[in-house]
Image 1 (cartoon, chains in turn yellow, brown):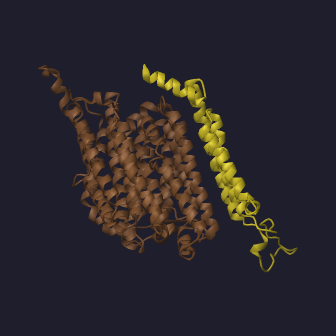
Image 2 (cartoon, rainbow over the protein chains, first blue to last red):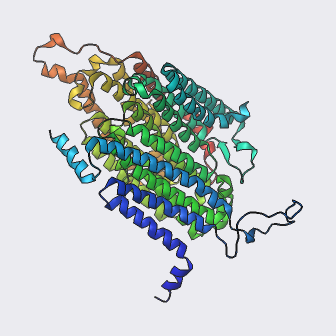
Image 3 (cartoon, rainbow over the protein chains, first blue to last red):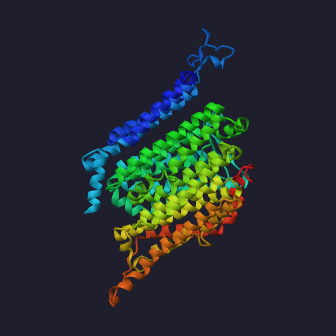
Length: 135
Length: 496
């Protein structure tokens, strides 16, 4: 226990993303309602976005905006260690767009499924499909 | 002009996707010719690139002039030049063959459908051409999202199958993204060539090993490696015929290409194959995929469903061949990407023509098909022989390399699985030949007067089918050139 606590406290950002990821995965596998599954998928994707955002952080780092002096010129040297890493954040802008698009396509499919079967419960849909196949 | 070809490869399908969708609102008759023209243009560009690579070596194209590793580069080398040509040729042939289907199923949505079709291709081509690990993820999602839409446009169970595919696909792509995150933590770069330079210094790095496992797990979901294949049969067999013929040959093969690319040029063979236990475990997964895919294919009573399980088995061929980690195995896996794309295309075009004429692809409806649709069946027979692996069709040669790889590695389970699968494929296809050739005569009891009537599919379907079938033989005859002039030059020095 004494070893475990510091391990969790030091790397808590990783633990948060893993817990969120497993929550999302559980919803995708365990839930019966298609919209709940879609929400689970979104939590799953968001956990990875948070992972990326957290790995960019540096202790004591600030926003990666290089301030010029009054005459418009930059400082002579930029110390990368003073700034948090902007690259993972930029990557996640793309990943957020991707996850929004995925959500959109998933919801559109869910609407199509609802129009077809009159329900979003997976059990009911499978039941209907089996009834059709039986006829 | 040639110097900008790698950019044109992506830009032509991307811009024409916009143009075609817009044309859908103005004048629908122009959509189809525009789509064909843009694909033909992109195919010409890819052939030009392949010729250039063979003559003058790999091309590194800096997008917008930014130098690597800061900027994104597109790399055309010996590994992806032939794959690019095959992807675009498959898409063009399938588009022509699916003309009648698209006009029937998507008459009022012509612009949107063809726009998706082209967008899907820009994703696939981009995955193959890019030299940036994160860029690959973005293009992967472009290809996947359009793929879900192309499948979900179908009737009956298609939207449900597509949503299930979307769930699995998103898990796969997210795992790949997570793996890239760990690569970035370990190396601080996303450029593939740059990562490969840094990997040797990180020989024992646990982070990088985790990155390898997570990336591969994500790609395995995407390529439907057994036991992660659950989404594939429903998604492909319920898709509209026009989409099935595009997605079935391309998606799994492009994902396998991504696996080869990540394994060989990102992690380098020395790192990827450094742990015998991991390689061994994946090869056994591939063996399970081959055996179970073949057995499940035997249980199907519909052509298109049978083909989807054959795809599951073929994925096992390529994954197993690659993870043998020796020269013959990797060569066989890479060669099989090209051959299997062509074989699957021919099979799906044949089944699309059969459904067009018969309205069904159930085995019992196939009686007398050789008499009704002789040209379609010629294509079908050649594709079947290729899948079984009979020379001089291309399927024989890639299987030959895979089996040689298995023997060299002493992996007898893989060799046995390949032979078993060939045997099962022979049973599968000869069962269909029997139904389609002999059955009406056996049942006729003297009523020979109304035998099968000649009722062939339209020429826009049969011509691409026969071209694809002939290409199976051509690929087989030119295997030697493809291997020595392209694939063997693509393999890094680390592979014995």
